[in-house]
Image 1 (cartoon, rainbow, N blue to C red):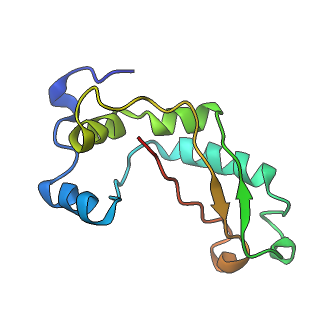
Image 2 (cartoon, one colour):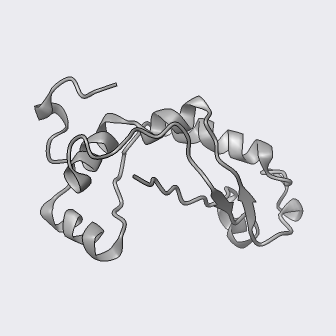
Length: 126
């Protein structure tokens, strides 16, 4: 799953984004992986939540923690070519390892009823 060429994924992050990462410890990368993977991953997380995505009355707990997931949508999302290029920019080529899972997911279904989806920040450690 390596980039087809250096040119294909070069410069994913701007200098300002790299500085933001250094200062804040995170950077937002829009369209880092296909929406379909996000939808598949969200479905798996909802499956494991003790509430119904279509029944806000079942969202009674403010925070629910879910474990690590090694299902295909999580592996593919964490290892997209865009993210691999960003990892190379942030920590250096060959200085990080591909992820085989993602987690731990805190879900906040109760606090975000209007959106009707659990909000789950995805952290990728390197």
